[in-house]
Image (cartoon, rainbow, N blue to C red; front, side, top):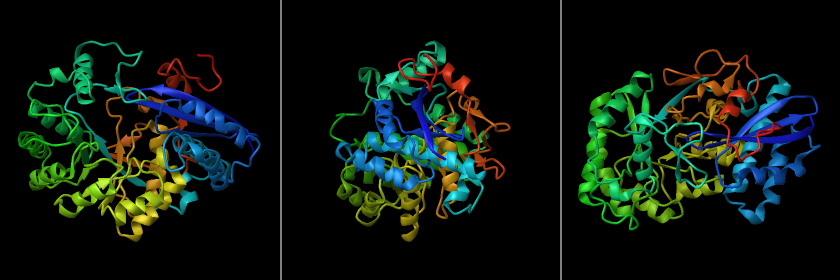
Amino acid sequence: MKISDIQTAVIEANYDWTIVKVITDEDIIGYGECFFAPGLTKVIHELKPLLIGEDGRDIDRLRLLMREAGATSGAGGGIILHAIAGIETALWDAYAKWLDVPLFRLFGGAFRKRIRIYADCHASEGLASLSSICTPRIPWWMSRSGETENFYEIHFRAHGGLKEEAQEPVNLQAYAERAKRVKEMGYTALKFDADIPNAYMRDEFNRCLDKLEVNLIASVVEAVRKAVGDDVDIAIDCHWRFSPESAIRLAEAVYPFNLLWLEDPTPPDSIDALAQVTRRSPVPIATGENHYTRQQFYDLIVRGGIQIAAPDFQKTGLLEGKRIADLAETFVIPVAPHNISSPIGTMASAHLCATIPNFLALEHHGIDVPFWEELALGWDGPIIRDGYIELDEEKPGIGIELNEDAAYRYRRKDEPFFDRLV
């Protein structure tokens, strides 16, 4: 199974979904997905000559070959590993198809075939979209009007723009209604952002929460908990925004509402700051989406004291993701992978989650993307049903093919789209 070509396409959704297509000399096609980054497709095409003519079944060797080639450009993380992860996943998909087995068979078989999904939510309906450098945008295919415009403005403020307009009161009822709707969709776990724009913010750079901000976030969590009851798990995401002291006060304030976890409370480059929070927080701390290797996760677990590991398999790659999960299992720590991807990355992640004994829940960040389900071919009905993905043992590889015609309709126009003219 020799690699004959590697192609890329980028779909402009709530994020850039960069899809890698590996083509073999036996006309087997494998799909993978990378976590977004500026200039990502150029890196993939720079790596391509290393792989053409290679046996696509030698995945670990090829992965290390690419890592060594990119060692001077970020061997411990970043865009090089994003690119490698997408290529690696496409190779696994192709290899499993070559063997005519579902992907989870290549990672030791399944502990479960029904994968629990948690929904990343906002307090309103509509698509919010960020560019490859996390600046708010309106996708070219989406008209800016009505609810879409309103939601775009809310999201824009939440990610650093229009701060002078962030004085509007937080709508607790909107959070409650959103949570109810997501529960009605069948999800048994959901997550909201804790770093919300508000009138009490004194300084956007010092990472300190005013007491009134803490109370406000706690009131949001309380409203969500009352809306969904005790049979739905709730998590909140801090996006690395807070100092240890502020994160601890926030954890103490939301503790009465029985959270599943508090995510990414402190900057990812300070394990000592994280450790201060994990030692004193009454709420379990989850982190890991900005970490790439099992060595980094060893530090998070041993020095940082995290209670839940949250790697992103579109950054780590599947093989390193499995090794990270095995490491976490050694310390009896559950794994709740971060995931903001299209159906391609989501299905690949779901297959790996099936093989992880200490799996907790997999994120889904696409409930507002109107064409998310449309991108998948070879699947009967919705991929996510009642908050779960049920893997089909009869479908080889990741279990779906990319609907390239649908993906083309929502492509980034300034990026290559496989072998088509854009």
